[in-house]
Length: 179
Image (cartoon, one colour):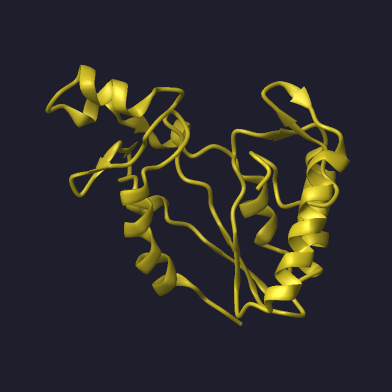
């Protein structure tokens, strides 16, 4: 696994303010493509971290389409919208400072749902690429919440807890729209 690398053969993403060379994540992505081909999956589910940006979003979008096209002959690709951000807050710390008041750690929906180049690109990437947005499981009309169904959502500023992630799996499976 290559930390924070998008599954994208072309894009020059910007990680923590520093542009990465295309080969840094592109080589990892090419290796993943080889592994996917060896596995012969029935479906390929992917997502991209919205905390990483692109020096050239058009090239990033083109790279996503190229990467997905390299495996759609094997199986359909499902792009999951990245989960809402915490607005930079450290989830457990905010909850500890606000016992019994989870709402104090909620983030306004427009702020929490950052632009997602992979998800947006999937909207017109062909019939073998679909998208799933699970934002409604985190957010109501106004806010995205740090606790859902009594389960803490975030274990830091940009990762969700294993418990919450496991609760998403059956919902994701139910929402898959495969060609």
